[in-house]
Amino acid sequence: MSLSFSSTSIAFSESSFTFARPTNLCSNGHTITGGASNCFHSVAGSGRLVLNVGGSPLCRRFRGFKLWILEKLNFQPTKQPKSRNRFKNNLDTGFSNDKGPLSDSSSILRVPDDKVTSMEYPSLLQTSSSTSPMDVSREPSLCIAVIGATGELARRKIFPALFALYYSGFLPENVGIFGYSRKNITDEDLRSIIASTLTCRVDHQQYCGDKIDAFLDRTYYVNGGFDNKHGMSLLNARMDQIEGGSKTNRIFYLSVPQEALLDVASCLASSAQTQKGWNRIIIEKPFGFDAVSSHRLTQYLLSKFKEKQIYRIDHLLGRNLIENLTVLRFSNLVFEPLWSRTYIHNVQVILSEDLAVHPGRYFGGYGIIRDIVHSHVLQTIALLAMEPPISLDGEDIRNEKVKVLRSIRNLEPKDVILGQYKTSNRDKVDVCLNGLTPTYFAAALYIDNARWDGVPFLVKTGLGLIKHQMEIRIQFRHVPGNVYHECIGHNIDRATNELILRDVPDEAILVRVNNKVPGLGLQLDSSELNLLYKDKYNMEVPDSYEHLLLDVIDGDNHLFMRSDELAAAWNILSPILNEIDKDNISVELYELGGRGPVGAYYLWAKHGVRWVED
Image 1 (tube, rainbow, N blue to C red):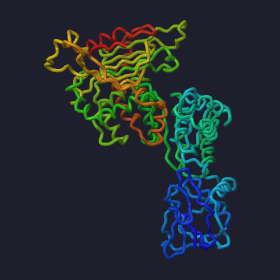
Image 2 (cartoon, rainbow, N blue to C red; image 1 turned 45 degrees about the vertical axis):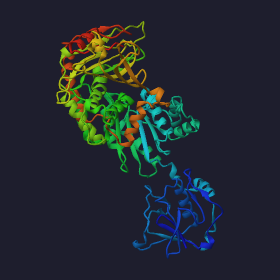
Image 3 (tube, one colour; image 1 turned 120 degrees about the horizontal axis):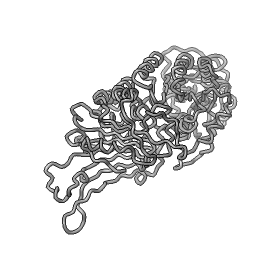
Image 4 (cartoon, rainbow, N blue to C red; image 1 turned 90 degrees about the horizontal axis):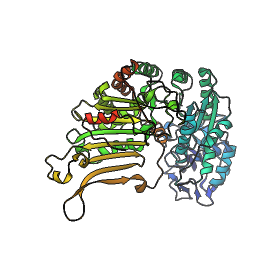
């Protein structure tokens, strides 16, 4: 009789193999018993007891048990004909020891009967973890490197998001986290820097301290110095060391200034990519300064990476509101028939920030058009207005988005209002903005296609306004021949049906409808049907960086701009940017904490849209 691991078996007599008791192998409840376990079965006519590892969902640590047995029994493999190989090992990673690989699936390992007497798996598991020449559970299947690891974005957003995914089980236990920057610090220094920013979910804080310690233990630092080519070689060597020769995928988050992006990307492409799995890079916005610089950047990146490897991240697109756009539209029959110029009068996209934002540091001279409108606003409109994709595959959704972007009419100065908040040292607001850097943008866009012809998409986004607000308002047309028009009154616009998708201040889906006020007589009122998320769902909403990082890990790229989307967005905005560069367009000043430039009110009225008060 023989004991077989997947396709590798050990011969022994049935009388010499006994189990003292059923033994739990995994936390999921799999057990081994003397004759009733699904993990063991007899091969008819062969006198062998087969332990089927590859096809059953056993714990990864069970590999250590296999390696321990093979090492302790000190046997030699005997080659068998390929026809004897009936069981395929589905493990992704092979095992090896000092004598070479142990991955020959057709070998049967013969052991004298007196070598095996009994097995108690827990004790063997403990032994394997301390005596195995290679702790396979430590070898990562995924490595994530944060380039610019000591910067504020990495410390405040990226590392906390990675830990949140790790804590929630969306990252493998053996993930490798690497920080790379120019500072001369150690692994422990980096761990100390990010430790204070790590928090666990407030809804289930189980084993929080243990998870933080485990995450920090998997975090390493590489000092790249001022030579990125040499630094990336060091990063690659450190990652190879931690990976231990296993098949591992790599993600590189380039949290670096725009002026350093090309050099970092070039050195990364030539010196830090793995040859044993896939590589993906994440690039922070803005994606160029204008159409020309963006095209050059895109062409350079595509000369080093494939399009499918590049993920251009905009954290605002990771909000639950954005993901809800397609869900609400394509999974509800009540909305899709209404989603066209026939029933929709206008669409408003509103994003305003309050005084808590420091735009001078945040923009770095790029202004709100390049930083927010080019990516977040236009992507929101594309998702809202696109045709139904043939599937939820990222490329299918991107194909529909780029069609919308190419159909948007180029902006003209008469349809745009620019503003800039009044800087003040007294108000402790950044004062490094130049004279033409806009901090407020309002515009009317039109999509020239059959579905949206003539429907204005009105955009209002600004900094230093009265409050933080993020919402999409879809206003429907008036009821033709409304028999209740006398009960509505003179302001018929207030009786307009609206669908409101709100993200801030309180995430909600609102539908404004007209109803009769209870009581005698006939009086109409405009009310809201309200789905308030905090009341409906008792859970903590993940940060947008968590959402987008998980999408990168899963290879879901529908919320990341493709190169052709990038170019189409620049084509829309280039006429306005050119006018700003030529000083041909005025920038209206507005008070901090106010409602923005007065000109935006007139722009709304010009396009026949009722201004919605904050």
